Length: 318
Image (cartoon, rainbow, N blue to C red; front, side):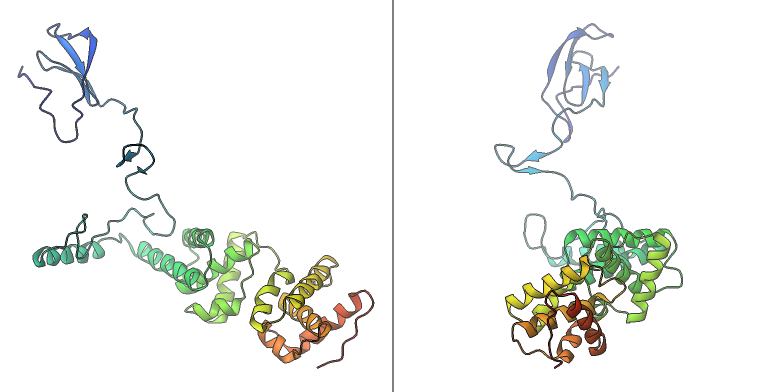
């Protein structure tokens, strides 16, 4: 048997050895154990290998463990491959040094081949396009990271249930964002979503109905008070008007006056009544246009709210 010198290790082996009390079963020689294998120092017999590494799964580039680093980023639902794809750089290497012209040309060819081979099927290509659209919409609407990740997961579920067949990918992506916002009770006006989405209003509406029907989304009804801050900001009203409008909206929601009514219409009526109480000149047309409703709807909700308010606040129509 050829003798192997265990001190001549490869680049990924640990040269720190530990003596063992047992003897070699082949020659009864001295046995040493490192992080990779247990071998005899006399004859080179490998007694045991592929041992379990009981060390930490992180490494630190400092003197202590305050700067822990792990290999790679965590898995994410935002990418079609969960974030495990390879990213090839352009002009600099890992240490920030500028690459030569020949090396940049070589990396350009590698990037082109890597881009062509990153999708294994048409479904995977559609998934990548849809997740990219979800990220674009959530970024344009300045939504949080949790909304973005859950919308990406909802889009994955829609593709898994074959809901993309015969439908627009952009519509399903926009409906996924809208559906997650509805599930969390976060106010999102559908018109604002249509402004940044690459699909019309009917496309988003039909796609959302499909997701809600087929996947059974736990959507919550939109409360009128959740629309007051955005509406007040668009109309640039005073803080007193905003607080009074929110109080009226909460009272309408608790007394079930807003049941079966358009939430934006109730919010517009509350803000209009509050502005009239505090002497701020806002017309019904201005408030209705900002809320995305009609003056007729605003007047109908105003009448119901006037009867609800203690003391019967009476305001003259603008």
